[in-house]
Image (cartoon, rainbow, N blue to C red; front, side):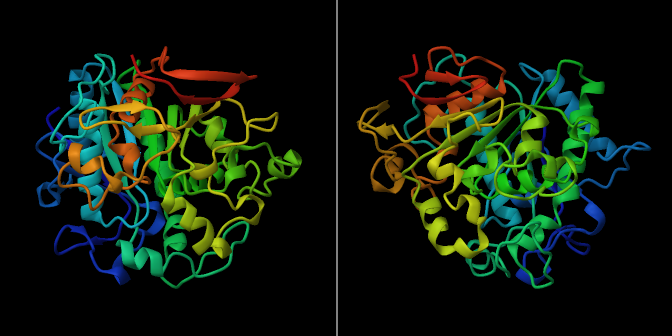
Length: 405
């Protein structure tokens, strides 16, 4: 892999040729526009190394010619032509998004965190064989994101407010998100056996859910995603349950409503995977602090409670219950006590020295070796044989962790 890749719809400071840093200028580009950046090494964590790609796209295309050519070359040179788009969560500036995407892409490729002081040996088939790139939507830093998350009570569809806030920026990111998904799906015209996957973390799940919900005829959109992986999804718990009245959806109403609000997202994906944990303290707080901004039909967070496994669960949805992933020693991770331990409480400093202030039970999906291994298998199109204890109900089912072999 010769380059690192980032796409963003953040407003660009023309003088510095990079996204604005200050809160008041951190908005979405107009008319669904996007900017593309590359760095001349694989999974480069240094934001200053990323340069704005000023090359022109081919007529009728979105991706700049240099960006597209480099990405295609890296995909063809990879172990397998698998392209994964990572969408970050809340509280990430542009610099944070670059660093986080680089760390996650490298961790998926290696089967463990590149910052680990003691690196567990992953199974031979547990690494991502393709290329991971990032999409950075206009989130603020952690403090401003918390203070300016939502300027209004929940409504359906969400109301666009002029006051700078996270929800407004997400609404303004919908068309850019869809444009990027379409452009990356279109790379199959160059690589016929391309696998295209999307991994979202936290509020990034809402970015994807809201964007996909505005597709009136998703089967004609040109967007086709092999697997969508939802990590610690900060969206309503009933988003993946069937609509109470499906006729209202087909009439173009209720696109953003609670039950079934992520229905279109599942239509453009082969399988939708929900990684969740009942010990996620961040989502537990989200339930309380942002109640007024959340859909009253499903106040519990999907990444905290997981989907409901009954006849209303949408097709091709699989839940991965990570509540039993724990650390059981000084040098390895194993399955035992049914607690998803707060990573700051003991084991992360032993394995991921230097990240202990930033990693907690909410973000640890991007660092825990078993979860990286399982995610990589999904991205590679594998069946993850022997990894799960599976109980199926029709086309959907729940999965709980078993010891990787």
